[in-house]
Length: 110
Image 1 (cartoon, rainbow, N blue to C red):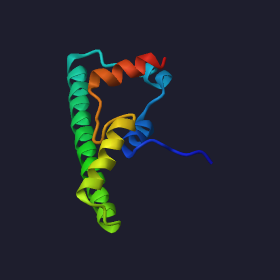
Image 2: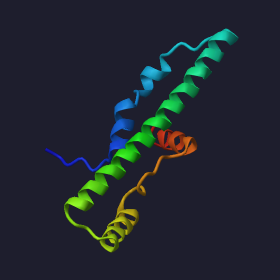
Image 3: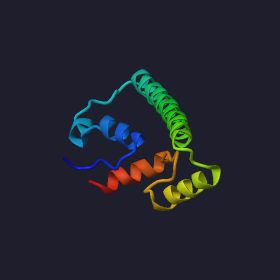
Image 4: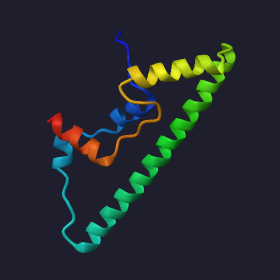
């Protein structure tokens, strides 16, 4: 069994990813009303995505606080841990990519 190095945000992103061939098979609205509805859904989805990311970040912070307290980690030790993670993690703690980055990364993998 392999190790999963992805954080919760990356796991959610991978779960929500749609296959490109499925997306390309979608029929897009022709009428302006349909386009407006589609744009509304896009904005709603982005808002939900942002709220979910904020919730995950808050939960991660609470979990980290509990673990630090459980193991008696001092504030100096905590700073060392956070500096280490910021330097050696693929993304800094609490990182949420901008829309442009997601689109560029998706295009690069095709």
